[in-house]
Image: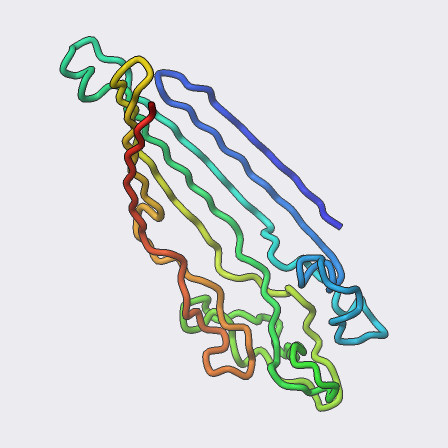
Length: 232
């Protein structure tokens, strides 16, 4: 089951500048076969409690509750001065900014406490606040969780925690040079993560691992690429 709200706004090009944006709020809920393995699994194949499939019912894995996108495109005008027109006319600068709430996380105990041979069992949450100070070394609070009693399942549901907020700012600069009636040369420069900012990944969700609750990965640093395209 999915509930969705989408708001979109666009300002058409005025004086060479066009702006657009959209905001999405969504909430997806499903059973394990439809939420944890992308919907392609066999129903009941991975249920921790085969007699109670609702024990594995929760928010859909991989979903983002809130997503915001905005784009800006600006193009330089056709200057009257010949030198200005040759050097500065026709350049197009575009920027894209995207921000979204964190991906949903499912914690695993890493050990078979139910004694049924399944290793993806979830731990027992013993504190109302499962988060630490949300820093790189203490995003989740290890003291908020423990292993369930032998022969039992933990009380945590799937996709019950939220990872770090993510964002991306990319930009591109391009221009088409007319060489002939049917020939042109396009120059383009692109930058991903323009500000070269640290964008943390998700914390380690394995309770039996030494780095549990810590963030040890990050999204890509700034990436630059340049291209020339000859059209004939």
